[in-house]
Image (cartoon, rainbow, N blue to C red):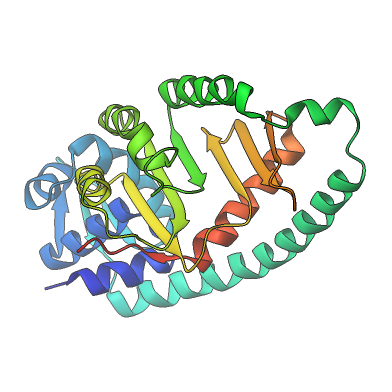
Length: 264
């Protein structure tokens, strides 16, 4: 029987939480249909329909044509080799993309124009920025991915947006958060436990507060927040394709660096 530790190994090798659970369930069953897999796990049949083609393409599952269609898990030894090779290739690409991101970000910062200074958020503009976040959270259809102070009781992602997140998770929106090391706060811990009831919610932590805060909504709209030595905050929203690619690569880099947040 697979334990949580084995699930986490599969997740670290690139599977989503849902995919890892489907694979481990199917491995125990040897073979099964979407309906029987759903019965043997807490995963909905709709999620299984969505993930199975991806897992077949990855080579982790074989599709058995019949009525009903059944699936067979590839042996774990073979699956681990497939995922390790894929992860090695992704990390190599990510290393190059991260270097490009840092080079381009340095160039953007050097060439910041007077017009861009309007993106600095002062106290009087705080509500405007928060209202924008509210709107984007409510409109997300596929995914919300964020790096920032999720555990801050006043402006943190978890407490302020828990209601939006719970509603979005019910609608099938995937949510991934990278934040600073967990602080023992009962209200925050309870909020995270509520969110973790959904297999679509994942949260990881870094040893210290992330230097760059960003949020992505459906990977189509990006918010980047940076501060200078004087604690001025620049708040930039964009759907520019180049900046979106940079933001995606940076998020994935930080996601790999972070560890799974364990809620006691």
